[in-house]
Length: 151
Image 1 (tube, one colour):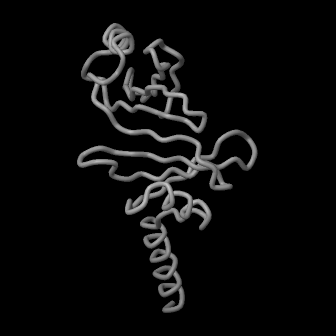
Image 2 (cartoon, rainbow, N blue to C red; image 1 turned 180 degrees about the vertical axis):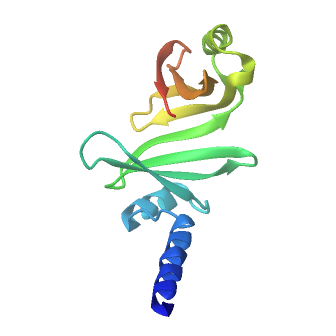
């Protein structure tokens, strides 16, 4: 009986330890981030895209006081995009008008300016509608591009 209880405690402990685990990307990805953003401490997240083994590693860090920055890299440490949190007022006027016409102000969560690896700039707005969370994406001029459901 002691062995069963001891085994159960061991399994339970491993589950608890696993819940607090953080993602550690490959060394080449961490090195690419450190070279691009020296002196920044990041917490890492991972995103699986497509049906293959395509993986994106996302470094979340403080770009400025009270401002979130997100740098994204593929598994080969190639830079994919940089997102920085902005205020609603920093979105292009067309994007602001679209959001206000299609979503309530209470549904607005966060806004980002995004620059991808090709130096193309877009804007993202995180909004909720009908209990679902969406990213609404606009081009550089503020024209609506697409909406994707996140959760």
